[in-house]
Length: 456
Image 1 (cartoon, one colour):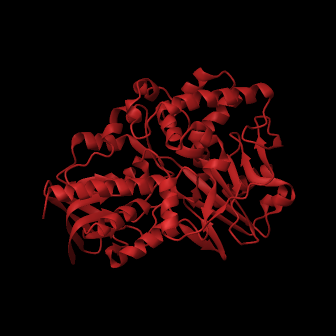
Image 2 (cartoon, rainbow, N blue to C red):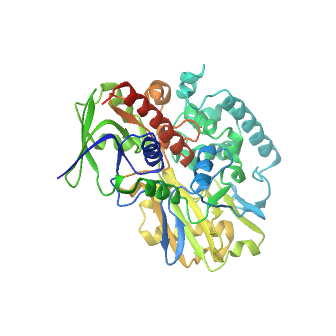
Image 3 (cartoon, rainbow, N blue to C red):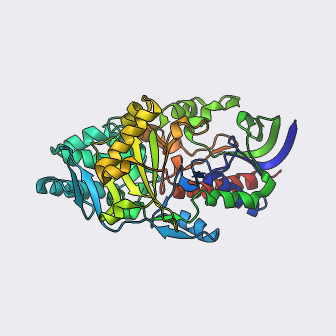
């Protein structure tokens, strides 16, 4: 048995929990971080396969992500730009691969004009939305009561324009079918990035990467905490009252604390036994949140052959299993790496296949973009976060229909000494590492205020 007493116990050693723990420790609070996995980082995981560094989880840094950029600079990490020189590839509904430059896909002129008009309308709506309070928008109930697909059907009669606009928040971000979430949830995704135009612009949203991998952010945050980070300790029970809590984890660990931070995805909240039970509304709220599903595919080649063909490596299609793909080659490595994504119902279908059949289907998608050489990688790795025991989905949690307007205001509300924080709950930076860091800083301030109000 291991018994500890702390001012605060943080559950989850991802970027959010470790950010909170470092700020709390710097303010003089005693802290311990308890993590279920045998590593830190949560949904950030930089691993090596056959001598190649691969980003199995989050990896990109965009210009608007000031919290993440500040952490990278403070931790002394370097960044490099994603390769983007050359032409991109779009596969349309006719199955033809077309090369293009710019942000708008090379559809017929009227479809391109319609895409531009729809982005302008969506930018206008997004500008009206406070990402920290989307439920406060005057049309929140209306927008949360219509699916993203139905909303776009009202906005445009052009099916190709709708399919492309839908993709940016459905397949590419929330990783759910466009009929499974609301227009308000989609607009929140755009508002969290500053505009819908930012989501469409791959050169903005996928701007830079960290040399050596983005997992270095939580790794270095954990180093600063030393022995106060405990791995391989899934939390099973929290006994709580207004005066504090007792957290019980595997390995006979019991921590008594004045405050608790749950820095894990919302779909994991109910894997913990709460004594007494959480308030009814909190239980119901949890039932309306779920993560999407995505397979992240890494294909490694002896060289980035697509560059010699004049291609940037950027490719899109709402009509192929791999809906988007990029040049993901590492800094200073002569080998070429393509990263592709298969999400929502497409992922369902491919995950039902035997591994070799799934690999073939995915590589055939890449070959549609880059040619036959894409069929023959030297290393092939799939990241399936839905199968990760302590994540069970990707990239982040979103509400079902009507849930954001109904429960959004209660998302971050503490229950006694229990505080909730993760990228899933962020406004600005929602579902990104930037949001995790913002939420870690926010919850630390909240906990420090609670500690000051209830002296030990």
